Image (cartoon, rainbow, N blue to C red; front, side):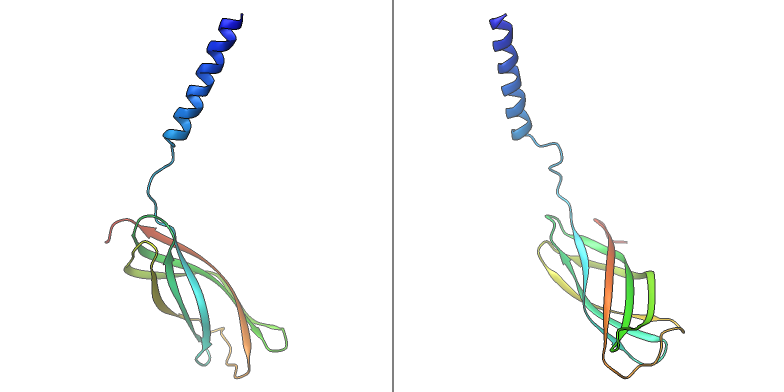
Amino acid sequence: MRLLALRFLTLLALAMVWVAAFPQGAEAKPHIKFSIEHVYLHGPGEVEIVGYFENSGDQGAYVKWTEIDLTLIAENGQEMWSDAGIRHYVKDIYVPVGEYIAYTCYVQNPDIPEYHGKFRWRTHTNTHWEKAAG
């Protein structure tokens, strides 16, 4: 019985060393995110979104599109305009590992109000990338 227990513990120790030495999910992957630095209102119907793509992964990739949820809030705290899932297509911008690429996009919607006071914004982004251009 002791011999069986000793063999089992030895096998378990070897299995743990094997798993630690050869991780299953060690594939190189990009991790690209669009971060928004500023939002500008350019009159009724148009918003300019200024930000950058950041690749915190371990492989470069091409950005294909980014999806933006955007809420504009007036100085008094009242929501002026909001839209979710605004898809903005990008023409194969390559983002190397550990790099930032500045990017500006424009959103046009007839419901965006004209506003000349101070405002703030809330955003959430989801960026889609691929390893190959085209």
